[in-house]
Amino acid sequence: MKDHYYLDNAATTWPKPEAVYTFMDQFFRSHGVNPGRAGHELAVEAEQMIIQTRSLMGQCFGFSGNSERVVFTQNATDSLNMALFGLLSPGDHVISTRVEHNSVVRPLNHLERDHNVEVTRIKPDSEGFVDPEDIRAAIKSNTKVVVINHASNVLGSLQDLDSIGKIVAESDALLVLDTAQTAGVVPIDMTRQHIDVLTFTGHKGLFGPMGIGGMIVGEHVNIRPARVGGTGVDSITPFQPDNYPYHLEAGTVSIPGIAGLNAAQKWFADLGEQHGADACASHQDKCITALEHIHKHELAHARTLIDAMDAMDNVTVYGPHGNRGRVSTLSFNITNMPADQVGVMLDADHAVCVRAGLHCAPHVHEDLGTVEQKGAVRIAPGYFTDQEDLEQAIAGIADIAGG
Image 1 (cartoon, helix red, strand yellow):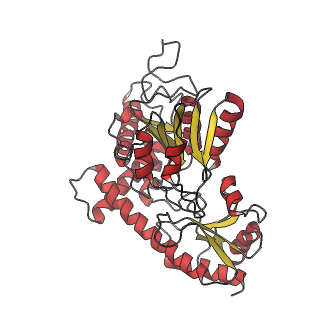
Image 2 (cartoon, helix red, strand yellow; image 1 turned 90 degrees about the horizontal axis):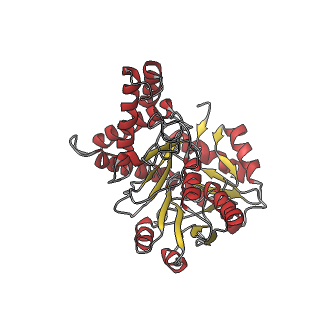
Image 3 (cartoon, one colour; image 1 turned 180 degrees about the horizontal axis):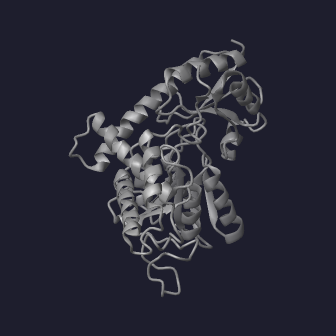
C-alpha cells in the first residue's frame, strides 16, 4: 500500500517529472544569482535560461509574437489581477461567466464596486458549459474585455474556445483566457484561437513549482503595470519602462521557478517525441503531441471514476457526462453528507487525497445548489495517477456511500 493516494491534481500536480526537480536544484546551485543585472558570466547565463524559457512557453501556446511578451508573475491569480486591473477603466464593460474561479470573480467584484466597471456574468448550463452565442449577445460598444476560465476547476467542463475566440475577435473586445486548469493538459493556440492575453500558473498542468506563473500579452495589447520598480535596465528612466517584459516585471524574477518551467517544457518535448512527434518538429508540435497524449490518458482515468460512481447508490457526480468536452477534474457528493466530512473520511480512513469545499468558485456551487452541503468533493486524477490510486479512491467512496 501507498502512504497516500494523491488525486488532488486540480490544486497542484504531484509528483513532478524527475527532470524538473533535478534541473531546479542544479541550476539554482550553479546559477542562483540575480539574472542579467551585473553583466558577469553567471548573471548572463542565468538570463539566457530565462530568455529560453520565455521562448519555449510562447511556442507551447502557439504565440506568434515576440517572446519578450511572455511575462513572469507569481501565479495565475497574480496574472489575472494584473491583466484585469491593467486593462479596465471606469465606464468599461467586461463579460465573464459564473464558472469562474475567485481569481477572476473577486477582481471583477472590486472593479465593479470601486471603479465603475460594468460586469456581465454569463450563466452556464447544468454541466458548466457557456453558450458562445450568449457571449455574442452580451457584447456592447463599450465592452473592453471578455475573460473566461478555459476549464472549470470544479466541474471539469471545457469551454468552446474556438467559437468564443472567433466571436470576440469580431468585436473590439480583448479575450483574456485563464488556463489554470488546461495549460499543460489541452493544446492551446493563441494565434488560431484569437487569444489576446493568456494567463497561466506553473504548478498545475505545466508541472512546474509553486510561486511561478505568467501571462502572454499580444503585441497589440498594452497592460498598465500594477507594480513598478527595479528592472536592471534603463535605470535612468523615472517611470516603468514601456518595453516588455520589464513593463510588467518589477524586481527580481524567480530563478528556481523559471528553471522548473524550463525543465518541464523540455520534458513535454521529450514526451512528444516518445509518442510520435518528429525529432525535427517545432517545440509547439512536440507539445501538441505530448498534451494530446496526456489529455487522453487523464480522461481515461476520469471515465473510470465517473463510471464507478454513477453505478453507486447515494453518489451524485456533477459536470459533463457523455462525450462533452472536459478535463479530468470532477466533483461529487454523497447523499446529504457535508462535503468536508467526506473529504476527511477519504483521507483518514483510506489515505485518499482529494479536496472538499467550495473550491474558490462560489457561483458554481450556488448554481449547483451545493452551498449548504459545504460544496462538493473534488477528485482530480493526473498524468502520474495509476490504477492503484483509482481503485483505492473508488473503494473509499463506495465504503462511505454504503457499498
